[in-house]
Image (cartoon, rainbow, N blue to C red; front, side, top):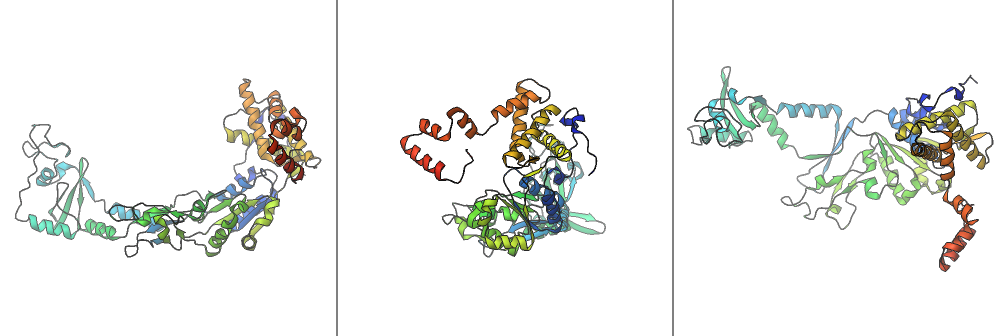
Length: 493
């Protein structure tokens, strides 16, 4: 054992150092933290078992800091021959960068209207044919001579030729675009001049060819972007939130009126967690949806389908959508039996099960960890001041008392979520009382108010049965009597 700093030497909790490492901010769960770090580095699954408020969510979220950033973007692509069966396209970072370069390459050259040929500037509406003054093409009257900027639409001897050439390159001459030739070195080159705000865009033959090739590609929609959060929280998710869906279209994807099927595809949490962490607290609450999680883990891909049989989306299906995620599941001890056996086997077969700690020994080192926890909670809340050491000592005493209630002597509880609520309530009291720091009196006041409602009922009525007798109707009395006398839950006592 090393020598630890006496926590009473700190003026207040603002002097407590908070670790930059997210997993080091988890208090008293050394084994869980160690296995979580291994799971993140080796891409293993994790099952965290323990009561609420001991740090399961914090561990799961911290894992995302130790995995690589996503390297793939998932798109759904229009299938022209069978629109209800769009394709899936997975693009890497390098491919996305190449696409951006290609898009930039079709932007063409941007020039000032004065640098364009006179006839082009006039036909596009930049130059007044009467006085030669340059102005915005949105102005139909020249601001210099007040004459209409009439564009000369007289057909020249080569106009038809330029129109044919323009169509061959995928463009048509109109008031926004002019096709003609220019001399580059010893060669004549076809160029297109386009309106571009107050400037003109010039597209040469190579740029036009690249643009035409890109326009021939089937349209697509990004459903899982490359720049995404690698941590996906799916606790309490519905079936559509978890597995994705295809939105309804009252026009059934009619090409003129409706929305094409590929545009209505929505990714689920299992898809958004691709290359990242999918965290599901209280996983047993998913019920039969657990089997879909199992399929997504086994196959590392899961289809997206329309889940409402009355919707036009029900006829749409996208196969092979990637779902290569790390599953971090959590549950209480009593719910462990309700995890599907194949799913639990899959977790154990490629991961770890962890039983979370409920308490830690009451040592100087662990009291310092409690101080760290207090400082973290205050910083995260952001609305309450820091705490004096006398006040912090009361929080530590409360942690000691709660551990003793659970028959743990010389210990500090690790059910820290409720203690976090007490810290916030103490901070609220300090603000209400006009204190610059949370003082001992503020914590005492919060302790008197921050108690379970069952304790307040017992204090005011003497017992739960007395309260029911006074407040409940006749039918409710019988219902409550059976519940409180036959239920295994005795938390109200």
